[in-house]
Image 1 (cartoon, rainbow over the protein chains, first blue to last red):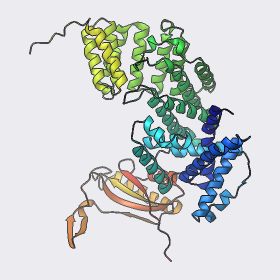
Image 2 (cartoon, chains in turn yellow, orange):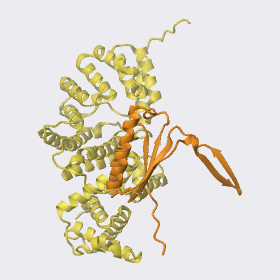
Image 3 (spheres, rainbow over the protein chains, first blue to last red):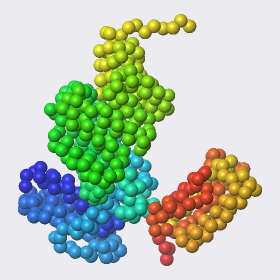
Image 4 (tube, chains in turn brown, red):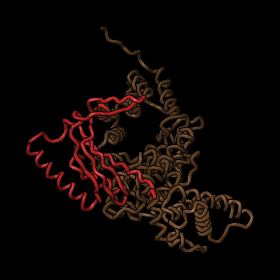
Length: 416
Length: 119
C-alpha cells in the first residue's frame, strides 16, 4: 500500500474504531484515547511489518487491548468486563452492529442538548477524526478554546447522561435533522468562511462530503440524507473555480467551467437520482436540483433559469425563509431581467433578518448596476461591504465599486 | 440517572388566580405529578410560594445578613421542583416537556451530583 492509501485506510477506519469502542466502553473519551493509541501503534508497526490484511480488525482489536490495559491500570476492569469480554481475536466487526455503533456515535455527538458549536466540534473530532488543532484552525479559534469546547461537551455527555443510541423509527427523521444541519454547517463553513482572510477551507468541505456519504451508507433511502449528499457534491463541483489566484471570489457567471469537477458532478447527479426515487423531496434535494442545473449548463448563457425559478417556488413552499425569497428574486431577475427582480429584492429590505445580510445589499447593487443606476449601485455595494465579515468577499465588493466609480453620476443631495 | 427539574416562570405569565384556566392547570399538575411518581421515579416534588415571600440568608465574615426576597431579582423565578430518576437525558427531556409550565416558563434539567456511598 502506498502512503496515501494508508492515509485513506486511517481516515475510513477512525470512525469505525471509535464507534465500536464507545459502545463497548460506554465512554467517548476513553474510546478516543484508545483509538488514538491504536493508530499511533499502527504507524510504527505497519512501517516495519507492512499493512495487515485486515487493517480495520487490527486497529479495533489493538484499540480494545489498549483500553483493557488502561482499565486494568485504573482498576476499573471489573465493571467493564462483560462488554470487553467479547472476542479478542482479529475479527472484523459484524457489519450491522458497526452501522448501529456509528449511528449511535453520530447521533450522540449531535444531541440537541449540546450547543451547535459543540455538536460540530465533537462530530469533527469523534466521527471525522480531525485533531483538535485542525478543528481549531478550521473555525479560526485558538486550539485551547477548541479543546475547552470539546472537553466541556464530553463532560456534559457523561454528567448529563446524553444517550448514544440509534433513535427509534418514529424519532429518526427528527434526530436526522440535527445531524444533517451539523454536516451542512461544516460544509458552509468550509465553502465561504464567515470571517478571516481565506474564502474557502477545503478540508472542511471534504469532511462534510465524507460525513454526508457515510450517512447515506448508514441510513439508506432517506430523502434528505440523499438530498444533502447530492447538494454538497453538486455545490463542490464548482470549488476549483470559485476563487481566483488572488483569493477573490469568482461569480458563477464568470467561473472557468473547465475547472469544474466532472467526477463530483457525476456522483452528485447519481445521489440526486436516488433522492428523486424516494418521491419525498425535501429542501436539501430541491437545492441540489438547483446546483445540478448550474452544473449541467455548458455556459452561463445556457443556464435554465426557468427551471431554477420553479425550484425556488418549490423551496418557498417547503420553507418560506427570507433568504430563499432573496435567492428566488435573483433567479427571477436572471429569467425576466433586472427590472423584474429589483422590486422583489426591495420588498425584502425591510426584513429584520436580511437587512444586515451583506448578500441582500450586494444583490440589490448588482441589479441596480445592470439597470444603469450606477450611483445607487455604489451606495448599495458600500452597504454590502459594511455588513460583510469576510475579507475576500469585501475585496470583491470593493472591486465592483471601483469598476462603477468611474461610471457613477454624482449623488444629488436633497436640500434640507 | 437522577435529575432535578427546576421550574421557572415569570409570575405574570401563566393562568390568572382563581380562573377556570388555573383550575384546569391544577388538574394538569396533579396528573403530571402522579405520572412522574409512577413512571419517572419521582422521589420529591414541591410547589414553592412566590419569590416575594422568600428570605435570602448569607453569612459573610461571621455576620448573618437577611434579604427580603429571592437570591436575585430575575424575570423568571423558581416556582417549584421535582427530583426524578430516569434512564437518560432524552427521557428526562421528554418528561420535562410535559410539565404544565413548559409552554410559558422554563424547566431546567440538572443532573444530580451522586456521591459514592460512605461506609
